[in-house]
Amino acid sequence: MARSPAGVLDPRAGERRFSLALHDPAPDVARFVEQHWIVEWALPAGTRHVQETLPGPHVNLVFEGRPAGIYGVVTERFERVLEGRGRAHGVKFRPGGFHAFLGAPVAGLTDRRVDIGAVFGPAGEALEAALLDVSDHGERVRRVEAMLRAAAPAAADPHAEAAAAAVAAIAADRAITRVDDVVAATGLHKRALQRLFRRYVGVGPKWVVRRHRLLEAVEAAAAGDRVAWAALAAELGYADQAHLTRDFRALVGQPPAAYAARVG
Image (cartoon, rainbow, N blue to C red; front, side, top):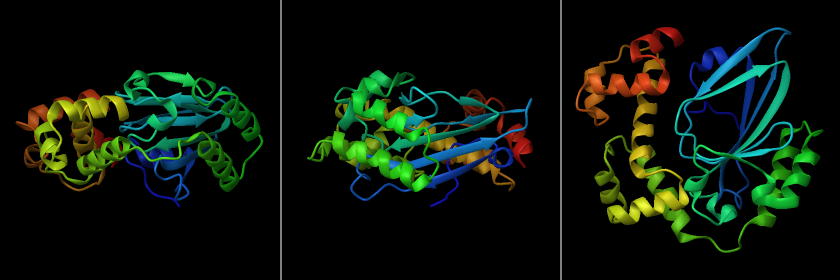
């Protein structure tokens, strides 16, 4: 099932350089996994493409060569250089979902990468070897999900579900612009909310709120329509347009108007 992913900067340029397929997880795996993404590219010799993304509050398991890697939440803009021919198959876990496999605070993985064997042991290492020659997307997804089923605890974790619900509320409601708004939406005390996010999401609720609101600003800039930036800044919880522009530049690498001109 193909969709347009949030957080990909200058997606039109990327479409000319690589293909992206997104696949929904099986229903029983969906309590852990949000989606599978598979990127494939074949660039002429001597050419390269630098793709930038703005990751959300997700852990990703990525199969690309060996060893496969588990990437915690990436808090800054992420750049990936594509050259030659290749494929990357990523498993994007739901916020809170990876804790079931890690069994420790997910904050310990933030801005870090570990090999697949560090979490999934020999089963993970065997899977990465088996996937090297598998090109069919459906078969890749089935094999990965079989490993996850075998490694997952039988019982659902209500704390993981609470973390996922809190992140979903932030993503869905533009009116949530402060941690106090998340407290009101979830009914959790602020310190309990912060502990929950550290253990299950990997970053604090303030980071999640700000990232989602900035992603909305990025999408507005890329839409091709004229944007009333002062009004949007107020709607996203900023004191004024200058503060939004500062955060936008820090994350994207250029101010909103310049990014809009680049991708328009």
